[in-house]
Length: 56
Image (cartoon, rainbow, N blue to C red):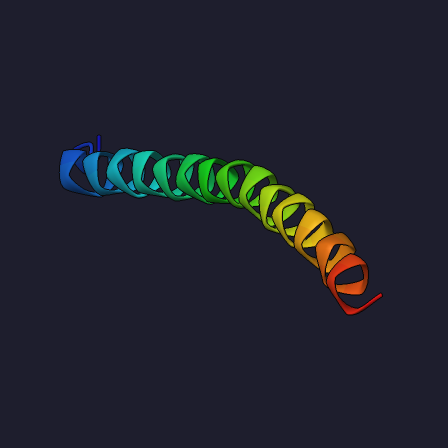
């Protein structure tokens, strides 16, 4: 009977963990960047509203 290749199995588990960690990190970055973009848009809107009032 053939010997099990434990090194291969371990490497596959490590690759799977690494893949899941990367996916989680990407979701985290995407989730974190979405509120930042909306706050920038909201912050610039009142500034734009003040400019015409000063010019008028």
